[in-house]
Image 1 (tube, rainbow, N blue to C red):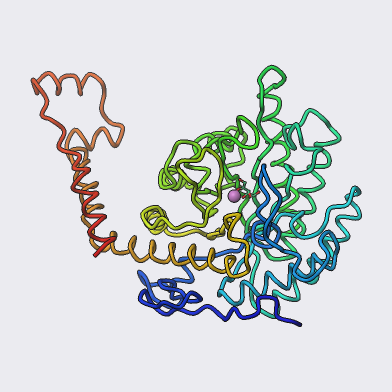
Image 2: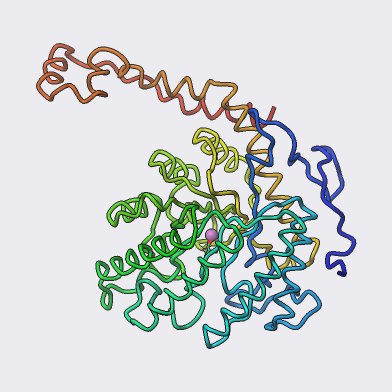
Length: 439
Ligand code: XUL
Ligand code: CO
């Protein structure tokens, strides 16, 4: 088979001082960090859609990148050329996982029976490549936002026909995920929301979405899907309001509908910031609720109000992300999927590699720094000390739920004026982080 990314070598670790553009500066897959090789902490995954399908088209202009891979777009020949390109790309970078939507893999036909046939054919081909390379599927999903039929939503649609079509796509995408050995199945509800409440019954729509998810769990488990289902929260775009607004909202929805045993969350950095939260906040909220499932790695542009899906370059953010991940004990069925795309003006094959090298290095550096923060211990011990008044005596009774308003009132009355609660020392703590990041 002919090489697609000619002149691009296998990317190896060379250290931070290298000037070689095709090398990792920080990602050293075998380096041990806190007792585990980096590759185990950082289960990197390639997003089929951005990397192999995205051409840089935006609302104002057509694509700039040629992703035909020497074939004719919208054909099965192209679908297979994308497989060839994808596996060569992952192999050269040492990426061991990929994620996909159904429609990323093949051109969609008007008829779902025909589309499904194409999906069977291409996944046979993908399976062969997986066998040859050892590369695995991280998660699969159904694209239920692109086709015009989903204009009013998929699970949240007003039309039974469209709802059934969504169900059919979920069924097939689950079968494909099982066929490819994926350990996750994602629901990102891009059209599950509303543009105006004047035409929308929120309760009805959310109940229907929950039903679709329940059917997915039932069917998935019946065909041997033992991994996690994931909801991927996002506050808006394309709809003005999306139901899975942020981690807390999605967790509440899952619990309300009894889905919390089978589902966890897929936290995406740019979605977090669109919701007015830090990436770290969304990870923390998920983790403390036992819901941290997987990560869509990217970053937004704080000066732009939409989902720009930049490759991660902000080491502060990846450090805090890896700090949360390490403290949560890692991701069981999840990984770090680069839901990221090159800028429109970065249209060459080289740029595709540069994006992944940047992202992988930024996460590797984040991992190294997060481990140093934990080993340093000053942040964790400060936080522990900050709440120490609840460790003994009456404070411990509060924690155990053994006290009353009466008892606390009597205590308060005896105190007179309470002492200040102790400095939050934010500037001191931020200084510690800087001294670890930039030593
Ligand atoms: C869109 C987004 C999706 C999901 C999968 O903002 O993040 O690519 O990750 O459908
Ligand atoms: Co995403």
